Amino acid sequence: MIRGGDIVKGSCLLQKGQPYLVVEREFHNPGKGTAIARIKMKSIKDGSVLSLTIPTQQEIEDAQVDTHPCQYQYADQDNYHFMDNESYEQYEVPVTEMPDKKYYLKEGDAYELTIWEGKVIDIKIPYKVTFTVAESENYIKGDTVSGATKPITTETGLTVRVPLFIKQGEKILVNTETNEYVERVNS
Image 1 (cartoon, rainbow, N blue to C red):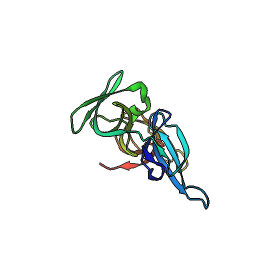
Image 2 (cartoon, one colour):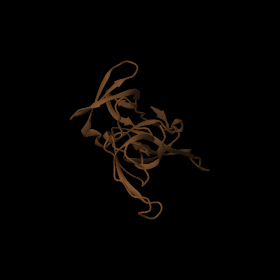
Image 3 (cartoon, one colour):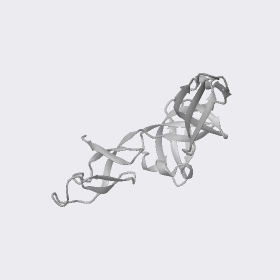
Image 4 (cartoon, helix red, strand yellow):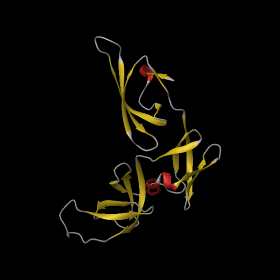
């Protein structure tokens, strides 16, 4: 249990039987009555957002989640396979629970797994990831106005819109929250 006044950004709380991550918190101390904490939480499992107002002295249940740094090994038809970097324990995450993550997972890269009650509930994808352009159409310079983009496909199957000068085989940096091109990466 954690008091409302002790909740900070990044705390994990249990609401509706699910773990939620506190993404915003604000304290309010009115002239009369008790101080309150206004918090905004995001479900670790499904991404839904929940807002609560809690008196600072009231206790709320905190979720006991663990994070493990793991290396992504491979994916088969049913599961993503990870290995814990410290204990060498193997984790299998069903593809059906996190189908969109497949576009961001690259074999051999490190990711953080969030585990709650012995089950992996989230794979933390870095904010920006470098990808290699696997498929790209060629455009002739001067074909269109400035700022024109084209769709490309990365080695993981992710489709991103990039400037016309990006060619197949080049490396690009992608914002994983918006799927937007950030810049070309020089190797």
